[in-house]
Structures are given as structure tokens and as C-alpha cells.
Image (tube, one colour):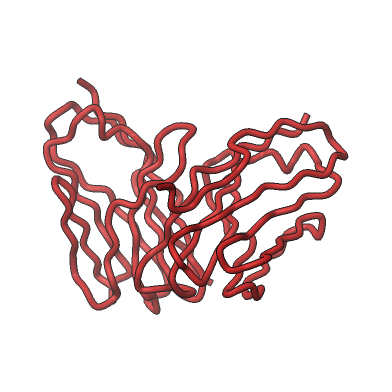
Length: 114
Length: 109
């Protein structure tokens, strides 16, 4: 059973399009995250939700909008895609924010904007 | 703001060698430190998690240590194998989760 699953795994789209990436966790965790991994492989947090409430919102363009319909899901919607949005996006979850139990990551979504 | 640095950025060793990867962080107020492995084009696999109250954790050929006061952690890999080739990331959990810059390891058969 996949603990944290993201879809799609790969996404190729044209500039200006709107796209969504979905994330689901079946671990019963309260907190979910979106991370962006750039071309230099550096991972940076974008958003964090705890029990459907936004708790971390790093400085990202407001074209990026997370949505958490319930604590097991955290989707990422991106409007007006730009070339610089090309990256790998990782979803993760933990029992609590900064938890004692560590973080579990999804396998990533490779977004390519052309 | 927490800064996490890993040294070296890349490492190439012959098979069978023991090796140490280093991770340093600037803010010692952390809940835990976690070591991950990332294979090319793949996601992150958790290797070891060390709570802030612990000094080390072991799993198979891997041993991770944590010295909070000096802001350092090491990942020791014994008897390296070609299958160990990957990027190794450390991450510290405080109010947020901060990743290091990663060490790209190549084990040469």
C-alpha cells in the first residue's frame, strides 16, 4: 500500500495553462506538505496544512494555491504556468508539524512547462 | 532561519569502503533529524530518524549520529556497495522541515 501517493507522476504542459497535482496519504497523519525540488536538487517547502488548516505558506507566487478537502488530501493547483515552474514537486506528511515521527514523502511529480 | 549544509557535495568511493557523510545545521532547536536517500528521478526514501534526545540510530550498514549542541550529524555507511549510489539528504525538523544540499554518492564496483 502506498503511504503517500501523488498524481500525476509526470506532467508536461504549455506556458499559460492551469494544472493540478493531487496528493493523498493513508497514514492517518494530521499534517501534509508540498515541497519543490529545483534543478539543483534543493528541496524547499511551499505549503503546510495541519488538519485542513494552512499553517505554513512560504513566499511562493499566488498562482500556486493549495487545497485540502480533508486531512488525507492536499492538492496543488497552479495557474498561468511559467517556464520557471518546471521542477519536481513532492508531497509529504507527518503526524504533527515538526513531529517526532519524521516525514513520509510521495514519489514526486515532475512538471515540465514548455 | 535554519540553514542545513552537507559536505561533501559529491563523493566517489570504491566498493567495500566505509564512508561518512556530514550534515551541519545552524539552529539546535530541532525536534529530530532525518536522513533520506534519493535515487535519480525518484522520490525520497527515509533511512534513519534521530529524535532530538537521541545520539544515534542504526539500521543495517547505516549508522547516523546526532550532536545537537554542535549542530552536526553524520551518516556512516559500512562496506559500501554499488547499490548505495544515490543522493543522500539530511533534513532537520523544527517549526519547519529544512533540507540539506545533499551529497551525491557514487560507489564504484
